[in-house]
Amino acid sequence: MLFFIGGIQPKTITLDDTPRMCPLCGLYRAHKKRIDHYLSIFFIPLFRVKKGEPLLICEHCGVVSERYSDGTKYRESQTVVNACPRCGKALDKDFQYCPYCGSKI
Image (cartoon, rainbow, N blue to C red):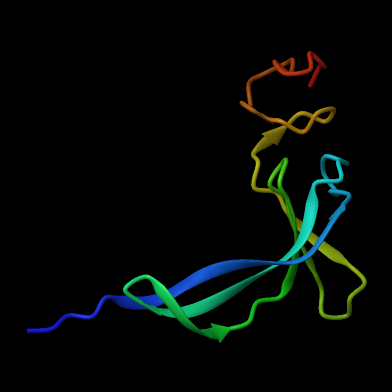
């Protein structure tokens, strides 16, 4: 009996290495990326099934900004629940001061 382990898996591709300013934390740590989906067998990607849309993903705070099809607006989905407005680090919701930079939340 022969079994194949396969499926569709995402793969993040960096489109531009130039760092851009993040809309949430204000640091230049966001990069233009795209998430493509590949058909894989035994966890080896064989070919692309679906080409993703360009995204702006911040490596510091985790914000993902999506460009609309007209190219003028961004929709931001924040993956960090609470973030310090000064340094952008993730915080618990009941913190009153940031333990990293000391600023008041």
